[in-house]
Length: 180
Image 1 (tube, rainbow, N blue to C red):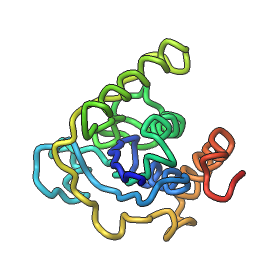
Image 2: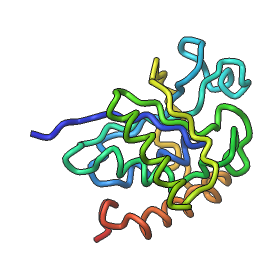
Image 3: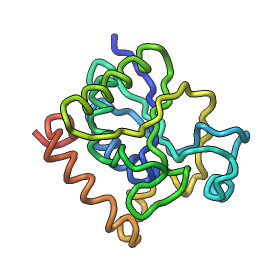
């Protein structure tokens, strides 16, 4: 019997993490939201003001028999720059920080081991990704859900997301829906 697990990841704009994660075999759903702050149920505008402490995150529900937490992290690290503090591409601010909000000690251990491996193998130098326990997840407003699917020609999406989708297909093809 397969088990559905949850991962909560922050890698810049949630639209840019949501779209590639949704392509993965074993991923059942991806929800954009906010985590890591001190204000209950913040709005997008409040998070963007950098007064709530939240990061834009995606919460990924996945079948652990089809894709492991480590495999999700491999994709996560491939689609964002974990060496820039409070910045991803054109997006600047603490809400765009790199973070893994773990759900249990096993996820914490896997996240820490993954970061250590990526640095020791020279894949990245100076990873700033935070590894923190998930205290609360707040779902983003409805218009932020499935954003790229609904708005593929929106200028930001059209420039930022296709290269991430291509990278995932090239690097993780066996884990991408419809790519064999």
